[in-house]
Image (cartoon, rainbow, N blue to C red; front, side, top):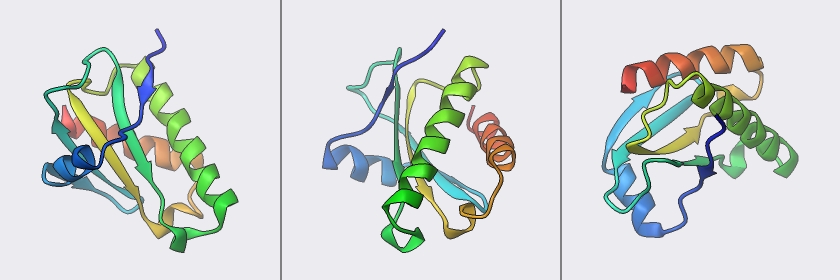
Length: 113
């Protein structure tokens, strides 16, 4: 079952999630919080890649990788859909392998459950 990934659009949602709980590792930081007006059937997630990390091509590649990983993780149901997520990428993700990032993300979402 493929779930729809929705990105956060309102500034108040971003500020609200930043006040929630946080999980970090060497590749990224995950902020998560329950938002009352969000649908439980859809995954509410946003990816933030700063301009310091690279040019637009590199930033978009990182976002595509993360979206692909999130689609794979939702298929094996490791994600709690009650939360809204905000993923902020760190500089060390540039040289990382796809499999390494995927394994780290799976471990982090197991912690969040």
